[in-house]
Amino acid sequence: MSEVVAQLSVSLDGYMAGPDSGREHPLGIGGERLHRWVFGLRSWRAEQGLPGGKGGPVDELMAAWVSRLGAVVMGHGMYITGETPWGENPPFHMPVHVVTHHPRETLVKEGGTSFRFVTEGPEQALALAREAAGDKDVSLAGGADLVQQFIRAGWLDELWLHIVPVLLGGGRRLLDGVTDELVEWRKTEVLDTPEATHIRLRTT
Image (cartoon, rainbow, N blue to C red; front, side, top):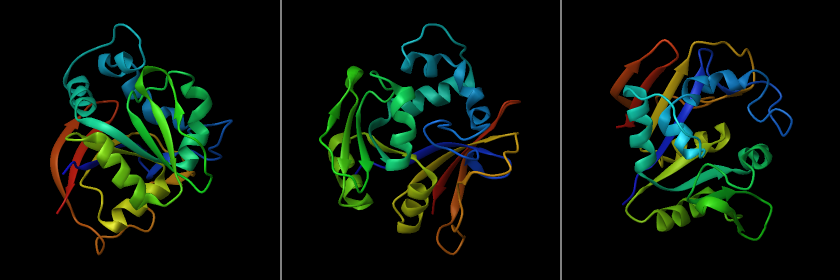
């Protein structure tokens, strides 16, 4: 069975989005600082249809991440905030399953991305994503509430955490309400750079 993996950037104070996240500020105020480390990478630029970029260990890490994925699950809030900046050719290039209370026809975009709106809850969205992914893995894209639900339910197999040396002071905290009593993690890889510390964690 395919695994469920999440790859997320967080601040030193534990936030994955800054204050007032929404359509006007998709990543929250100051939240774009959490992702500066990835913007210049060759693998990231290729996913955006952009040429060039730098290689190296972090780029190889990201290229390996992209190659293992076959479908995505995300929350309604993440879809709403990302809909406009993603445009007509979103960076996923695979089926995306949006957990929502708002029924809507599947939306097919350019580049292989389709958004399927699942109103039966996260477990059904995961089942549909596994089916779509085939022998590849399912990416849990966010937001924070959905990630917490997956961790509590025991559905998340691996977490790739990028800890960025900034303080946001508020916003969406990644691991609110998640304790050691619910899940234990095993560290499998650490890659430290000036821009971020990249940690791979598996549930035990």
